[in-house]
Length: 206
Image (tube, rainbow, N blue to C red; front, top):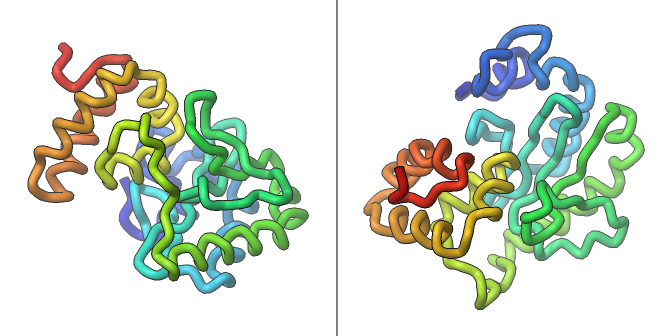
């Protein structure tokens, strides 16, 4: 994966064999992605690279992340359950995602048309970060480590597969990751678990 922000906009995320080729989704949607970048930076967000993608932070918290796929490109919000979404533009990453958390684009012109809405949603999310607010946890939900939550927020394919798992399988990952002593170890385990999650297996299954 890339570690420098400019590499994403020039070559892509580095997570597949289309990296730095004309077929790379980041190159296909380059104009729209640059517009999203401009809007996020103009809002005063700090631009970083996480999981090979441009991630935008405020008050020490992840606010939004940009992603490009074959059929669309997206601006996804962290802690999206807090957002009021008065313009009804947020969509779920997948049918098993708990809350609508992304704005999906299929044309660069859509970014310009929605710029006032995007700015408003970013400012709302930034205010929640400044206040230290997080969505209330559903008592029925399994408590997941923060590193796993952030990874799922940034990886729609993985999030859909994880939320499709049985509660017991989800719990197996939560328990395994919670036993790790450091964030780095948890992130390493998450990377190693990806293929299992996509295959619908639990942490201890072969």
